[in-house]
Length: 114
Image (cartoon, rainbow, N blue to C red):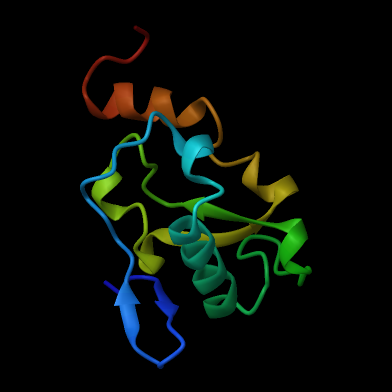
């Protein structure tokens, strides 16, 4: 899997995946340099096109969707292959959007409905 990276001034690519940082939820990491680099890499790979409705949008109108949510697979959080470019309308329809990610984690752990 390809990891997002940040271009340094001297053209050195640094991996920006950090297993040592634990987040309470995706909202907390949304402003970090690591998250922004991952998000940008996903958008560039998908040519700024929603992968469901196939419409093109400016970056500020797109959302980076985690295929495997952070709550289910935190080790995949910043892997570009775990991201998908979606517009907001399509993103809210995914099973793991918002609180759906917690329900998905419960169902994968055999605790559905709790």
